[in-house]
Length: 221
Image 1 (cartoon, rainbow, N blue to C red):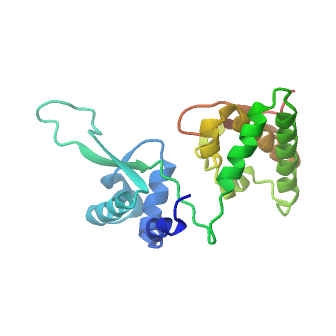
Image 2 (cartoon, rainbow, N blue to C red):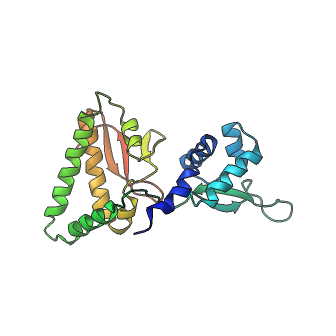
Image 3 (cartoon, rainbow, N blue to C red):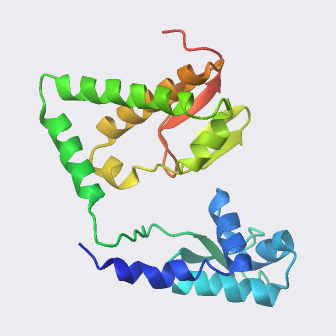
């Protein structure tokens, strides 16, 4: 287990309001972004935008690539622009140290080894029940997007389909994708049912996002 204090430095970089806004903007995009785009969006100078973006990159919160946004190549195309996107680094601070990720890995491993499938069925049932419980305790709010955002899913609209940019269980999902996606689907199905919404959760896995999408129309199963 890594020292939790190692994450304090990078996370402290987000205390600055402008830098946090820059980080949030970059993370909300489905493509690497340049300094000019961030500067325009935040209403700040390009030099200041570059300073904050480079600080986030130095702390490992953003990854840097280079590319020509115009698509031009060859002589006269100019130098490639410095582009930023969210890094794959995960930070977790817990004092005293806790390792909930290890517990999640052990539970997923147990479900994967259960040839009879009883553990997976129990996990689906528990996830569905938790989803309904979240809906019941949401103080009468039927705002699915808000509830998902509060739990780290980062929902966004994709031509009428609500997709989820982030999987809160990403680390475990890399090792046990079927187990985690199945659980995730049941969790959102329970949440939608508890809210009484006329939408349905479906599995639509793709790189760079959560495996579950929320589409119009009731669940016909």
